[in-house]
Length: 113
Length: 117
Image (cartoon, rainbow over all chains, first blue to last red):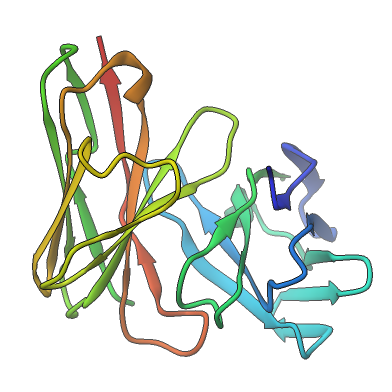
């Protein structure tokens, strides 16, 4: 039972344009959502998060949007840069994001120069 | 940021042997570490929560006698896959709870690719 879904395994975006990565979840008990970025041969690193009491959180070029009614969140990267090429994982937690995380399968983002 | 070191990066072993994977927090103390497993084209799945000085808490469906977890110090947790079989071949990754704000406190190792022949 995949509680967190990233339906796009891969995405290619032109440098300078906006990258939009999507994530859907089924568990209504999730109250905290995170995005992690992973480069090859490295572990995932925290990128940005959002609490269920908010619908938007912004950090520089990265913005996460949460639509609770649709159980959907998205990560926007603008403008996209070559260094953004990586695998992005969506994760969800029932306890503030510091405990057990449920991950999506990841989306490989490739930024085309 | 905080660093978590995981070794080995990859290991190949014969069926029936045991394999130990180490997870170390290099610049912080971690009372809690998590072990995940990822099969190809699937998501990272939590296997167990490792607490320093106490028994690990295993997720449903994970055999505690097969996946032995030891968290003997505040900087080291080990996962031992006992009597490994080909179906245990997977990517294993640890994370540690360290300093940081809400949602930022989990730091991941680089993972271990296990192949059982």
